[in-house]
Image (cartoon, one colour):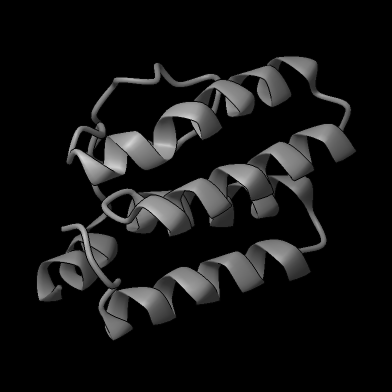
Length: 115
């Protein structure tokens, strides 16, 4: 799906990224970033931007394991998206295998299918 992110997907992605920035609980921030990650995977820049946001949160939380995992994911995010080689549904966290596909939540699948 390389090219411009469709407006419906972009709106959902931006809403999740905004919710991650404004959430008061760390667990909620991560969940919104994970949902934004699923939406962003097919597009190199949003996918990379999402991992940068995950890295920033990991650093703020002083979570070295997560931060290291995000650095690795930042390196492969854009090329993986550009080549269409990304594990669909993967939440993007370091605790999840970097190549592990996961089920896409129904609401996100509907947004992505509209693209």
